Image 1 (cartoon, rainbow, N blue to C red):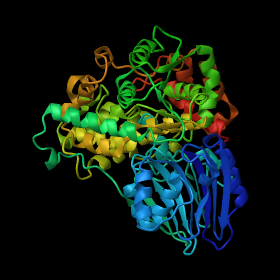
Image 2 (image 1 turned 60 degrees about the vertical axis):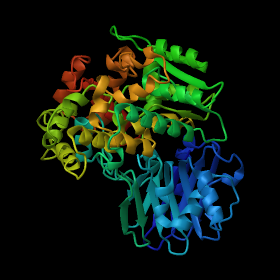
Image 3 (image 1 turned 90 degrees about the vertical axis):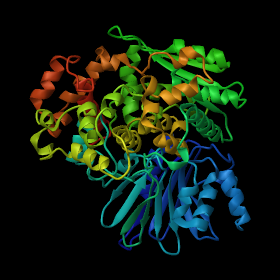
Image 4 (image 1 turned 120 degrees about the vertical axis):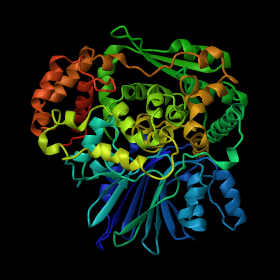
Length: 594
């Protein structure tokens, strides 16, 4: 797990190594254990290293393969790198390190861009063919590892975070109206390749981009489950599906123990993280470190779920750590979390993850997290309503149920110059749901959430907040083979038992019943949800700052209305409307965007 950066020139000039150095330095939190630069011809690469696999200097990056005449930088972990290393060795390749980075380079030499289809893991990488000048960029199937791009006709820059690209300079920071529309409609989701900035894009998940020396490129999407029923699963009973899901999750958890350092677990006490702890215990893990965070109650809302996390920790005899955050720390912690955001994220738990990651990083370098289970196995309360319509109405039901605002409502929120002339967010949803596959409305809902919304909201949130403290978060529920299995699972088994039915059935085989059958919990930060004093003060400062007035993103009368009654205005999804617009403005100011 690391941070990568680079620049490719298309005009015959040399890359701006100083700009690559600035990007690399901005990525220092993602890789506190090492720094490297490489430049040849029109390409320069930068890297910050977090030592997880092969702790020696042999695993340092940028890494070159002199025999293959290639160089590369890599972020993430290929969990099956040892098996691939054995295959490559049998094919005649020799190795100088024990790192998965070297396996990625040799795999590219052997199989070309098709190497990604053999990788089991999370990754983003850039590989340079020194003889041809061609550069290959790639991202893992579920977009767990980020890769941001900023280009002009003369050059392309890339980095593991958007702030790193800003550090290099020369970025068009005007706002993208379509992305802004998505942010305000889709609960802060901005789908790849867009970001809220016109001059920054992101490589979509499951994509390989081949960039030619003249700046032309072509993309190949190498993975997309069909979300249909498969012939090989015909005749499986509900119990068979339960066993299959449990076995696939067990494999996913086992894979994510590959490391040369200890691996802990972020334990909320909910079904998903508790399942990870239970399966690790089944695998014989002893003295497992687990971590939970809670917040002070506000507005009669509880801010912690320690009862359940303590229960799981005691049951499996983990080495448990509990962090209670007082409300007066939330406002101060907010600024640190916003600095860590590659894009504005309005979910309250970003502060929780940031604070928790700070403490966890003092104990371990790697944790497993339960992120993604609700999207993959239909755990949210809105799925039954969206699922209960004909397939032909899936898009409209999704928009009506999930969107924060309609296009018409946005007209009273945004300055007219920033409002697209049509409902671009709804158009995106309709186009995605009209694609081939996805037999039922729920199949279409989960395909959209798993491959678009989840990537650019909860997954990005976890990556940004953990990596800001040099902590690697691994997400077994996003193991691509488990996702493929879940995509093929009959919708009624996922919707059963109030949602995540097949996963709850699996949980009953390995967990205390009270953990499986408890009411669904969330990761609440009541001080933000209810605009507690210090948070509200920070919000007022941001929205009334000269930069905000000069930028003029939101209509003044709308901002005034929200500030007059900070806790009264909710989006359709129940989010605090003031917090949503304030977070965007705080993010823009924090990253020096004018």
